[in-house]
Length: 443
Ligand SMILES: Cc1cc2nc3c(=O)[nH]c(=O)nc-3n(C[C@H](O)[C@H](O)[C@H](O)COP(=O)(O)OP(=O)(O)OC[C@H]3O[C@@H](n4cnc5c(N)ncnc54)[C@H](O)[C@@H]3O)c2cc1C
Image (cartoon, rainbow, N blue to C red; front, top):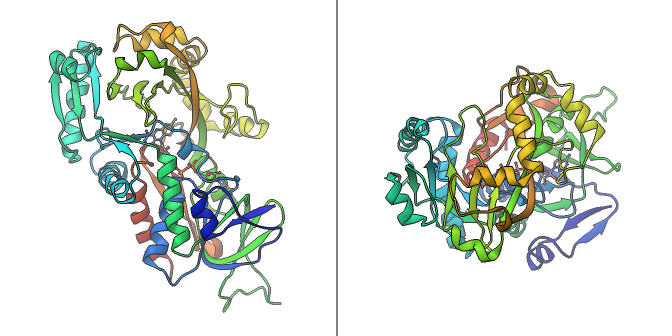
């Protein structure tokens, strides 16, 4: 059963409750957007605001919107420090953070600009910290400074370190709330949202005896796994953990592949919340794309510690024992992952160990807050990252947007890789994709 969320019910329920139900759908639309995570929602919103006379449908396989990465993340509004100058990540994060703050202000969505320290605890980390500062300056990150041990204690009285990067522009927000607000904007502008529609086929309609689609206004069929079909002119996919499979079903390249990495958080017991004021991050290890285990205050006042990064046995598997034979085989048979594992076996085993034995994770975190003890934390939520990987085992660092060739490929645009900080960057990504859609397609 698919669910079409109507404008009024969508708004009343924050995008989640009442709906019109239907067993079949044969609508026609100018553009279908697949995947209602924060990237799909932001982009659908941007497109409909720019082109109010066109018709748009947003297709989501779950009952609710933004349940996956966009609903399971650290909730940080990143300021753009880490990313290679000139990269999409650098540009879109810096612009995205500004747009995100403006959007939250305009919509009255709660956020806190609580700042962030990236803390060096060993002398050998100092050159990397200084290089990060240079990067941040090149990326035009606002208000970035370097502080010494006293500066660290002035900002975070329980944190110990020898030097830190101070980024007061970094903040926190509930990204799912933001994503749902984009969805409300989209609905209010006349867009249609259909949930429980798991797209498993995107192909050209061949109705005339000659098989020609010439002259057909809506030549693409987008079908789900229950035999429903709708038609459109163009498709944009924003499938997160399934972005490679969505690319494959439309005849585009399967690579880069997505490999799921589970990240488990610990949560501070409320009586220990005084230990942390803002975000406290380590100096990242340049060999890995993840930022390292960090202390992050949440909008509800709790403090999360994490996440680690371990290979997940299921693409949207949030529990340690969640397993999908297809996802598991898919990952392990991929040469790119085999190479990555061979190169990083020690790190991988360490991460698994710290995931299973939280004492080991706490020991790691005590480097930053020595007062923290094992009895101060409990196990918390989990997120699963969509990490794109090439066939040589290289982690794809930057955002990747890609189309294809041929009848279908030339009408489709895929968001192939949108890892962190894609939530922060979502409004800037949406602007860029909307430009790309306008360039590629005849709207
Ligand atoms: C643990 C963790 C911490 C993070 N922390 C931060 C942070 O602090 N700040 C930040 O900016 N970013 C952070 N990120 C990154 C950020 O959350 C993601 O980059 C962002 O949410 C990606 O959004 P998305 O829309 O691409 O993917 P998703 O949110 O995963 O959405 C994809 C959607 O597509 C749907 N879908 C998939 N296949 C189909 C199909 N066949 N048919 C229909 N629908 C389909 C899925 O159900 C899903 O709803 C974090 C990510 C993780 C995992």
